[in-house]
Length: 375
Image (cartoon, rainbow, N blue to C red; front, side):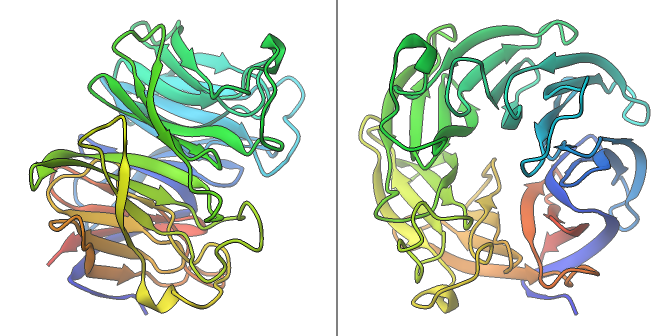
């Protein structure tokens, strides 16, 4: 039975498992994990009674597990699914919709790319900050797409980690696709960009056509987990600027690394952004010191932080709310464990969003969306 502390369930939606949720204007947009489920739009104007009002399917071999909206536009990814083969005549990349009427989206563009497609991205209503595969590069890179005309996206700029551009004569210092862009998050003229086993980088995009690295870090090794997201904290605390970094509890770089320290959230001081400094971590105490099955620990925090309480999706441990008022001593102040979805062995909380009403949306990779509030 669902349970929690400091959190109350307002509503629940029985839907296909989701990789991402975003809420705007009384509608939740869901990107689903597995075909045939692609993207769904949910009326959440009454959060006690969420209702799916539109959905689209995707063929086997692909999935569309990420979605973002802004300025009347919806952008959904299209990516190869768990090593599946892209259906002949189909494509990977992005689908772009006009959602002037969220109950009846109109597709305006299919933007194709190479390889397995686009993984994760953010979108500010004009520019999409994406992680595509591109011919001539090994692994996903950073790309900025200008959607001023959503029917005709234009590349505004790109950045890659030195070593990725093999067509340009570069040679990676790592094996395979381990160093690749996971997703960039924009604040002002900076892109806070996770780079999987390559750690993370802060990019200056004051000139979007030529993004420039300001700084970078990488702690894998000695820790084995890939870097999922870099989330800047917009309000200074104690006169300093800060950033949360979430590692993801999935396949480690090396099975011998970090088995008794599952993936966690790091606090970094970025007052001097050229020298980001980790100053603390948050982890569930019960997970420290003993091996945990993959997808037990951290997945990600919410990507826009308002105030000093940060909701985080903690895979098999549901929703955790982290108090960051003292950046040097983060602590848990609330939590929620949904019911285990039918057919699953345990919870797998994947993404979290907070809407303008302060409601928290938590989606499970296997099934369902919880709508919650802090009490």
